[in-house]
Image 1 (tube, rainbow, N blue to C red):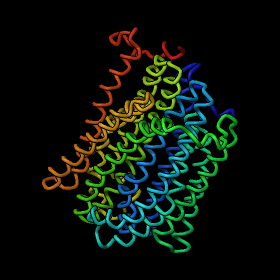
Image 2 (image 1 turned 90 degrees about the vertical axis):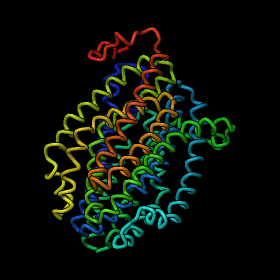
Image 3 (image 1 turned 45 degrees about the vertical axis):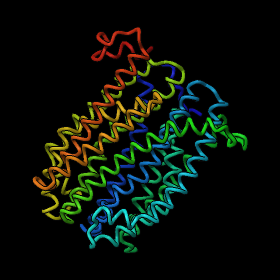
Length: 459
């Protein structure tokens, strides 16, 4: 019970940071073992195998991202009920969310496994890596139920203010994943199939740890009647979860279009883009985690009507995002070759990555701020603007890659990312400012303490 945290009372900065750091370690470990997984594949199996695994990135984002969006949307309503201290509504929401998650897991598994070859063909996957991409994808999507189960259970725990249990789960599963990666690839010579099996098995372990924790919480222990809810409960969950899921899927489609054009440039570009994407995902993680933290914080505090605390929490998380940019953006700008050679082995792929990383690194602040603005809106149960921003992301990403790939080649991918980040960030920022003006009408935004939020943090 000590890990569960009521975020509606107490010092805001301390509450957010205490929640943030375990969550940050969780997300970083997830990205780190994905990153190390790519390194093991690249060093142990070669550039073609790395390209095959990286080629699955946009497809898995489309499928898994949809389920993560649903889970995040469901968790906001769970946090609302928890913040309002309404145990009856909490159990109803939990029961309905679990039923919907099971249905989604079955449907997405069927769609992803049966449609994988079509997806890869649409991506213009090079014939030399098609076979390995299919092997990796079939195993990964065959175990999708465990990935969805982990994401759902971790989101439920975050809604309760518990970011430590998911950290424990990821520490255990990461160590297992890396050990199995090395065993399956270097000892048993299982190729990309070994990497995929290791990922699935690690997700099973992470899921079991999170579910065990949920079952230990008396207020979250469900009975049969908690799974028999009125239609309105499911409607509310879907109204909040589906827009977030669509947002992720729309963004993924844009990434798939970029992947299509990258694959058309050859395997060296596919490998370089895979490596650069790993770095983007890794270096975005501090700000992405700040977004998850402010979403849970806003969910609980909006449930109790404390919108002044939501705004103050926003300041704290924007500060985290800015600090992340100053450190990691600088690394991308000033040490691109060192970063590239950690994953890549051939000079051609390294050359492409060395051009991509500084350009994207100079503007990664925009996606860092996007995570915080968008997640705050989601925590306020305002999923429409984030969904629309996903459409804007896709439109900008696709239009830039289509227009400029013929003239500037691989570098069009960097400009496509930057354009998508900026467009989505501006929309979410404007809508959030308007929403907070409505919720906090007594405070003039001309005199808000953007530079001195500390005076507001204990309210």
